[in-house]
Length: 176
Image (cartoon, rainbow, N blue to C red):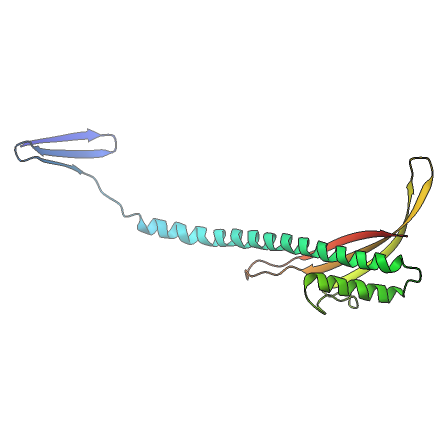
């Protein structure tokens, strides 16, 4: 049986070998430290930061989805308003806004959620009209009427420590 003791860079190493019995054992000297406590402390420090980042990412994704839905709903409201404003005898402005609000609700698949009476509310639909003058290729001008529908809503948050934010979408339609 031979015994060899080597000094290496990372600590002592003892090698025991017995060729007759086929035994070969390597043991490392020095103190071993238990690193389980350190890993637990690191986890406790990092876990809230990871949860915060996931919450912010989820809120951002949810806000983008809401913006896409509201853009589609505002487009439906703008088309409804432009159709009524372009008719021979357009109804009153309030009736047009009410019909555009109904079109927004229908596009969202709800009834009575979006309203046009309380401007400070989260689910508000507003309408503006304007006239634009466009230059034509032959040097003339063309007057175009434009209606803009704006729909606003506050984003939702499933993560308690991440706040919500307002999302507003605008859509325009031309009429004559």
